[in-house]
Image (cartoon, rainbow, N blue to C red; front, side):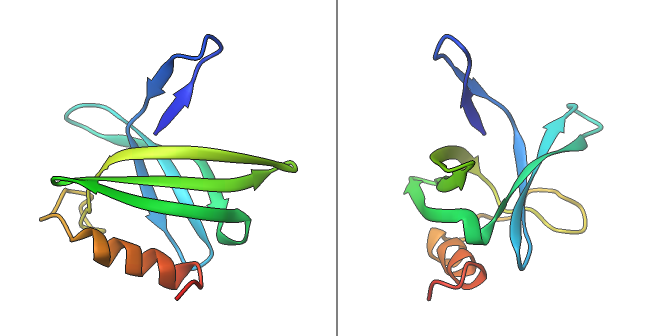
Amino acid sequence: MEEKDSEGDTIARPVLLVATDQRLIMLEESGLLNKTYKYAGHFEYRDVTSYEITSFLKIKGLKISFMHRGRKMRTDYRNLTEVDPATLRAIVPVPVENTRALLDGLMGRR
C-alpha cells in the first residue's frame, strides 16, 4: 500500500488484501521470517466508486477510488501476489483477467 506523508513523499507498506463477499480488508504485514498481520482498514464495496487493475510484465497493481466522509479518495496497491488462503504463501501468479473477474463479481459489476 502506498500513502503520502505530510511532506508529500510516498510511503510503501506491505499489505495483505482479503476479499470477502462484502468488503476488501487490508492487513498490514510485518516480520521477515515470522510474518504477522495487523488490521489496517477496509473498503465496503458499496463505497468503492471505481477500481482499476493494472499489469506490467508480471507485476499487478490495484487502484481503488472510494468515498470517505464525503470526499473522493484513492489508494494504490502495487506488486500484488496471489496467496494460498491456508498458508498465506505466494502461489503461481494468476492472470490479471482472473483477478479482474473476481473483483467484478464481488463488487457486483459484471
